[in-house]
Image 1: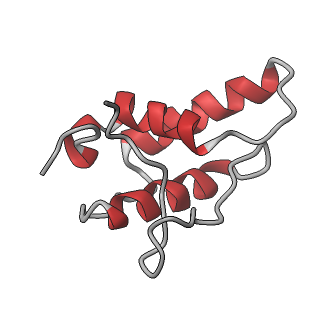
Image 2: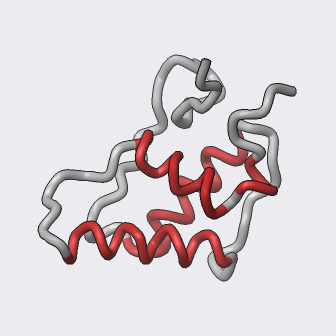
Image 3: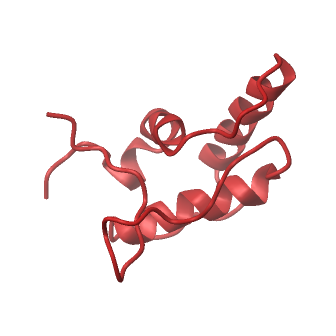
Amino acid sequence: MDQRKPPTDKKNRDKSIDITVTQTSGKLGVLMWLNAYLELEGKEPVSENHSAVEAIHQWVETQYSTGREEPISNAEILVQVTIHLKQEAKIGEQT
């Protein structure tokens, strides 16, 4: 079973955080999404200069430069987090 979950707020874990990543989100939007997720996982936030933020931002930019129009889904960002932030996020591991 896949243990990965999109971000949820602290008051209602079934409700997704309202951070949408699009072509206009920029690096700050990726950082906000990423730190919201890490906070809910009980992990330390990362800085804007973290290599994972840059890598995920570049991935988002590539998506839109090749013609994408719809927002990036939480599931898609989570895949990128799994790839680029394995140590901090420990995605998919049970605690």
